[in-house]
Structure formats: C-alpha cells, structure tokens
Image (cartoon, rainbow, N blue to C red; front, side, top):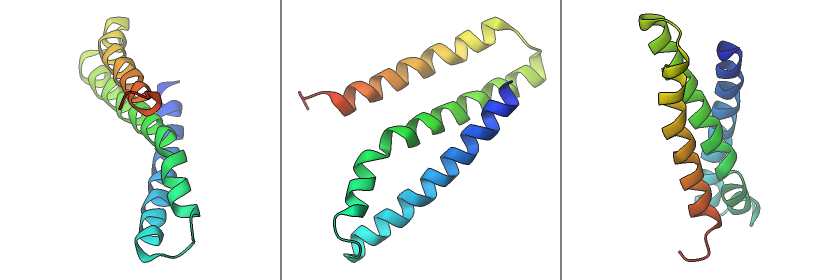
Length: 97
C-alpha cells in the first residue's frame, strides 16, 4: 500500500510542481493575466500535501527497508508530518497573519 501511495503522491507532486514553475514564469513575464497568480494562490496546499505525503512515504519505506516494518516507525514519522501539515493549514487559513 505504501509504494502505491508514494507513486501517486510523486506523480501529483511533480505535476503540481511543474505547473507552479510555469505559472510563476508566466506571472513574472506578465503573460496570462491574473490566472497564473490565481493558480499560485489556489494550488499551494495540494502541492504541500502531496510533497509531505511523498516525503513521508519515502522516509517510511527507507526506514522499513533497513530496520523492518513496524507500526511504531509509521507513528514516529507520521505524527510530526501530520503536525507540520496542520501548521501549514493554520498558516494558510489564519486571519491573524
């Protein structure tokens, strides 16, 4: 299950990352009107989420390959990752900043 999740997250991360690069280049060049800036503001959370899932699953697979599968490893890696994602959600939707 983890290799499949890692593959899906990798495809999403690389696809969204490429669109971010193109949107930023278009925005800096003044091409495309407001759409590149709109995309940069809308798709930041999916890019961060797919990157976090891709990175987390890669770390879990690497650790489990050398030390064996364990639920404790997934908890130790997944808990800080979940807190990081929640922190990013707070920063995105907070009106205090």
